[in-house]
Length: 169
Image 1: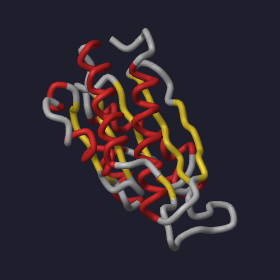
Image 2: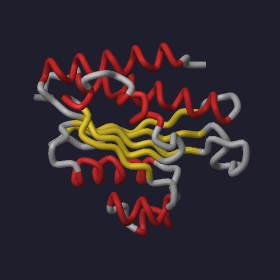
Image 3: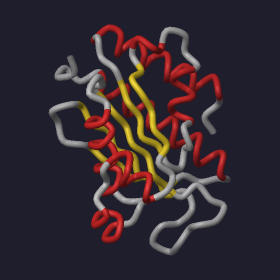
Protein backbone atom coordinates (compact mmCIF):
# COMPACT_ATOMS: atom_id res chain seq x y z
CA UNK A 1 0.00 0.00 0.00
CA UNK A 2 1.26 3.46 -0.90
CA UNK A 3 2.02 5.39 2.28
CA UNK A 4 1.36 9.08 2.84
CA UNK A 5 5.12 9.64 2.59
CA UNK A 6 5.33 7.85 -0.76
CA UNK A 7 2.37 9.82 -2.13
CA UNK A 8 3.93 13.06 -0.92
CA UNK A 9 7.24 12.14 -2.60
CA UNK A 10 5.43 11.48 -5.89
CA UNK A 11 3.66 14.85 -5.67
CA UNK A 12 6.93 16.63 -4.89
CA UNK A 13 8.64 14.95 -7.85
CA UNK A 14 5.74 15.92 -10.12
CA UNK A 15 5.99 19.50 -8.91
CA UNK A 16 9.72 19.63 -9.57
CA UNK A 17 9.25 18.38 -13.14
CA UNK A 18 6.40 20.81 -13.83
CA UNK A 19 8.26 23.78 -12.35
CA UNK A 20 11.31 22.96 -14.48
CA UNK A 21 9.10 22.90 -17.57
CA UNK A 22 6.93 25.86 -16.63
CA UNK A 23 3.83 23.67 -16.84
CA UNK A 24 0.65 23.25 -14.79
CA UNK A 25 -1.60 20.27 -14.11
CA UNK A 26 -5.34 19.75 -13.66
CA UNK A 27 -7.08 16.71 -12.18
CA UNK A 28 -10.52 15.15 -12.64
CA UNK A 29 -11.34 12.56 -10.01
CA UNK A 30 -14.17 10.18 -9.25
CA UNK A 31 -13.35 7.21 -7.01
CA UNK A 32 -10.39 8.99 -5.40
CA UNK A 33 -12.65 11.80 -4.22
CA UNK A 34 -10.07 14.58 -4.53
CA UNK A 35 -7.17 12.62 -3.02
CA UNK A 36 -4.86 13.41 -5.95
CA UNK A 37 -5.61 17.13 -5.58
CA UNK A 38 -5.15 16.87 -1.80
CA UNK A 39 -1.79 15.16 -2.22
CA UNK A 40 -0.66 17.81 -4.68
CA UNK A 41 -1.84 20.70 -2.52
CA UNK A 42 0.02 19.28 0.49
CA UNK A 43 3.21 20.40 -1.30
CA UNK A 44 4.20 23.99 -0.46
CA UNK A 45 4.43 26.12 -3.59
CA UNK A 46 2.04 23.95 -5.59
CA UNK A 47 0.14 27.05 -6.68
CA UNK A 48 2.95 27.52 -9.19
CA UNK A 49 2.14 24.23 -10.94
CA UNK A 50 -1.36 23.08 -9.90
CA UNK A 51 -4.18 24.74 -11.85
CA UNK A 52 -7.31 23.02 -10.55
CA UNK A 53 -9.09 19.84 -9.60
CA UNK A 54 -12.65 18.65 -9.85
CA UNK A 55 -14.39 15.71 -8.20
CA UNK A 56 -17.09 14.31 -10.47
CA UNK A 57 -18.46 11.39 -8.51
CA UNK A 58 -21.84 11.21 -10.24
CA UNK A 59 -22.45 10.74 -13.94
CA UNK A 60 -24.32 14.05 -13.97
CA UNK A 61 -21.23 15.82 -12.60
CA UNK A 62 -19.04 14.16 -15.23
CA UNK A 63 -21.40 15.52 -17.89
CA UNK A 64 -21.97 18.99 -16.41
CA UNK A 65 -18.44 19.83 -15.29
CA UNK A 66 -16.28 17.93 -17.80
CA UNK A 67 -18.55 17.56 -20.82
CA UNK A 68 -18.54 13.76 -20.81
CA UNK A 69 -21.17 12.80 -23.40
CA UNK A 70 -24.25 10.97 -22.17
CA UNK A 71 -23.68 8.42 -24.93
CA UNK A 72 -20.22 7.62 -23.60
CA UNK A 73 -21.59 6.93 -20.14
CA UNK A 74 -24.58 4.92 -21.34
CA UNK A 75 -22.58 2.86 -23.85
CA UNK A 76 -19.35 2.31 -21.90
CA UNK A 77 -20.21 3.07 -18.27
CA UNK A 78 -18.53 5.41 -15.80
CA UNK A 79 -15.64 3.01 -15.23
CA UNK A 80 -14.20 2.72 -18.72
CA UNK A 81 -11.45 3.92 -21.00
CA UNK A 82 -13.90 6.03 -23.00
CA UNK A 83 -15.15 7.82 -19.90
CA UNK A 84 -11.74 8.66 -18.41
CA UNK A 85 -10.53 9.79 -21.83
CA UNK A 86 -13.53 12.13 -22.04
CA UNK A 87 -12.93 13.27 -18.46
CA UNK A 88 -9.27 14.11 -19.04
CA UNK A 89 -10.13 15.91 -22.27
CA UNK A 90 -12.79 17.86 -20.38
CA UNK A 91 -10.30 18.70 -17.64
CA UNK A 92 -7.94 20.27 -20.18
CA UNK A 93 -10.82 22.06 -21.89
CA UNK A 94 -12.04 23.61 -18.64
CA UNK A 95 -8.51 24.42 -17.44
CA UNK A 96 -6.95 26.52 -20.19
CA UNK A 97 -3.93 27.21 -17.97
CA UNK A 98 -3.07 23.53 -17.61
CA UNK A 99 -0.70 21.70 -19.94
CA UNK A 100 -1.31 18.26 -18.46
CA UNK A 101 -4.24 16.47 -16.83
CA UNK A 102 -5.26 13.18 -15.27
CA UNK A 103 -8.69 11.59 -14.82
CA UNK A 104 -9.66 8.64 -12.60
CA UNK A 105 -12.77 6.50 -12.37
CA UNK A 106 -13.08 3.14 -10.65
CA UNK A 107 -14.82 0.80 -8.27
CA UNK A 108 -13.20 1.35 -4.89
CA UNK A 109 -15.59 -0.92 -3.00
CA UNK A 110 -16.53 -2.55 -0.85
CA UNK A 111 -19.79 -2.48 -2.87
CA UNK A 112 -20.54 -1.67 -6.47
CA UNK A 113 -18.53 -4.38 -8.17
CA UNK A 114 -19.93 -6.51 -10.97
CA UNK A 115 -18.51 -9.49 -12.85
CA UNK A 116 -17.30 -7.16 -15.63
CA UNK A 117 -16.30 -4.30 -13.31
CA UNK A 118 -15.09 -5.86 -10.06
CA UNK A 119 -14.09 -3.98 -6.94
CA UNK A 120 -10.56 -2.66 -7.45
CA UNK A 121 -10.98 -1.96 -11.18
CA UNK A 122 -9.70 1.55 -11.91
CA UNK A 123 -9.31 3.38 -15.21
CA UNK A 124 -6.90 6.32 -15.37
CA UNK A 125 -6.25 8.59 -18.35
CA UNK A 126 -3.53 11.18 -18.80
CA UNK A 127 -3.33 13.84 -21.49
CA UNK A 128 -0.93 16.53 -22.54
CA UNK A 129 -2.39 19.52 -24.35
CA UNK A 130 -2.31 18.87 -28.08
CA UNK A 131 -1.95 15.11 -27.68
CA UNK A 132 -4.53 12.32 -27.47
CA UNK A 133 -5.28 10.85 -24.06
CA UNK A 134 -3.58 7.67 -22.86
CA UNK A 135 -5.78 5.39 -20.73
CA UNK A 136 -4.75 2.46 -18.59
CA UNK A 137 -6.76 -0.05 -16.61
CA UNK A 138 -5.56 -1.50 -13.31
CA UNK A 139 -7.01 -4.11 -11.00
CA UNK A 140 -5.97 -3.21 -7.47
CA UNK A 141 -6.38 -5.70 -4.62
CA UNK A 142 -7.40 -4.69 -1.13
CA UNK A 143 -9.98 -2.71 0.75
CA UNK A 144 -11.36 0.68 -0.25
CA UNK A 145 -8.44 2.63 1.17
CA UNK A 146 -5.84 0.39 -0.47
CA UNK A 147 -7.57 0.69 -3.86
CA UNK A 148 -7.85 4.45 -3.59
CA UNK A 149 -4.23 4.90 -2.42
CA UNK A 150 -3.02 2.71 -5.29
CA UNK A 151 -5.06 4.76 -7.75
CA UNK A 152 -3.61 8.02 -6.42
CA UNK A 153 -0.06 6.64 -6.68
CA UNK A 154 -0.69 5.39 -10.23
CA UNK A 155 -2.19 8.74 -11.24
CA UNK A 156 0.77 10.70 -9.89
CA UNK A 157 3.33 8.30 -11.39
CA UNK A 158 1.64 8.57 -14.78
CA UNK A 159 1.60 12.36 -14.53
CA UNK A 160 5.34 12.32 -13.87
CA UNK A 161 5.88 10.07 -16.90
CA UNK A 162 3.77 12.35 -19.10
CA UNK A 163 5.37 15.52 -17.76
CA UNK A 164 8.83 14.18 -18.52
CA UNK A 165 7.97 13.73 -22.20
CA UNK A 166 9.91 16.21 -24.34
CA UNK A 167 6.76 17.65 -25.95
CA UNK A 168 5.50 19.16 -22.67
CA UNK A 169 6.52 22.79 -22.64
